[in-house]
Length: 293
Image: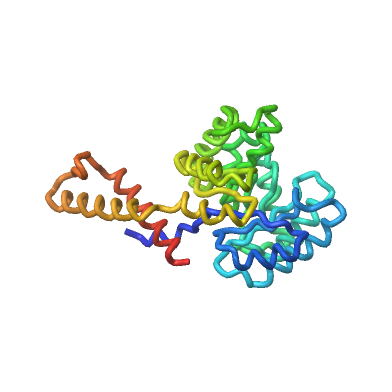
């Protein structure tokens, strides 16, 4: 088996940090999130955009955030700040640039062209937020638009707003359909997808339930709005000790059966075949990637 840890980067917890808040950016260096989104969009008022841009780009260049994946969220296409944001972020060279409200494959290709023209290094990926009806309906072609686009972030608050829905426990049918639809498109393209935020930072029970729901649906992690959500997100989207032990035992049982010339095996009273082993190896590789941090 190849070393799958080389291909896996944990994104269980993806924490938004306001780009205009210097103390928040400093605190982020100590938070055990897998990824940090240094935000220039929703959390920054219009009169603070330029200053926040400079601060966030300096943070991205600092090299002071350790293992944490650093992502700069720019303002959306068509806003007065977008072009300057994208050029500055590309020059700063973070791990990725996140662009809100992506609606088409053409936008993806135009963004990649602009990033390259601004001197983005090869390691700087493009992340896309899917949060509009147009983006949802074009999710498959967006996902396949360019290899530099690697991660999708669900903007569930905007989806509720633009579908005229309601925020309800367990999430309303339009949101669940949007999540499932986009997840299928992203998996077909072999890329990563992160669930949307949970708005009530004091409701840890509700957060745990929604994080479990996202994990059960197949998401790689969850975007967060408060550091208190990091630890439960890391737990929800990581294999448990029982998961790891079961995967190890399943692989051992299957390899023993293969050594005996069998194509399938029995494990804990159930038939297992190659597809179960692929999943078990994925679980172990993800566990190893987390441990290697």
